Amino acid sequence: MISAIYRLLCRLVLILPVLLCSCLNVIKPNREYTRCPTPPAPDYALSTSWAALPTRIDAADVVPSHSGLQDAQATATVDVFFVHPTTYLGRAGWNADLNNQKINHITDISTIRRQASVFNNVGRIYAPRYRQATLFSFFDEQTGNGNQAIDLAYEDVKAAFQYYLAHYNQNRPIILASHSQGTRHLTHLLHDFFDQSPALRRQLVAAYLVGFNVPTNALQVVRPCEDSTQTGCYVAWNTVDWDQEYAPYQQGAVTNPLTWTRDTVTAPASLNLGVFLTHSILLIPP
Image 1: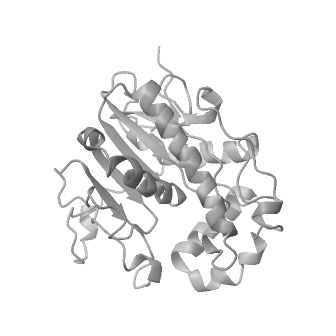
Image 2 (image 1 turned 90 degrees about the horizontal axis):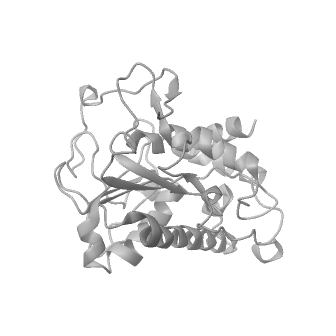
């Protein structure tokens, strides 16, 4: 039921923002941020604080059946730090509790399985769980409750990245990837870490900042990718229904993922290689 509501809301966010505004009270938390208990902070030394780690079997290991692809994390020389989108729609609090196994399960079977896993043929996937802000936070323009929830979520993502750098990375090249709320946090992370550190910028292969507006002035040093061979840059794009205009997206940085250009020319459908609609399989290493 929750996953069905989540899929519906995603479609509304992308296609029918006007209609969504009339439905927001359904997901609005019933108390102010300061009156809600703060969920316990994650300990990233514990494997349970990660939705995906390359050293264990999890949802990021799946590959499409009959695709010929393999989970190559065991031998990959590149790391992928993936921040998942919103999977919490709760009203009892503004931030998700990592002890809520239902939310963790939804995260794993949806975005970790269907998004993070696309990198397992080329990189070692690290995907932190974090006290994500509830979906309503991104529509709360009056009270400031939403911003407080988003800030708390970012503090977890920041702590996870710091732990990852100190204990997992070992100076390997890094791919950053995210969707929706995750992109909000990774954009902040790029500013706080990569904009400030030439050493980290040398490690950055690319950042895939998908599904959330990335303002053109959000980053001062790391810039949008200009072509498919450039490294140390970011790729950002959003998707809306054909001929729909969604105002928050209009001032964002965009690199077309089909043409690898930053113009507004429509790409032909033939450039899209398609998607796998068949079942995925979990390959258990020997």
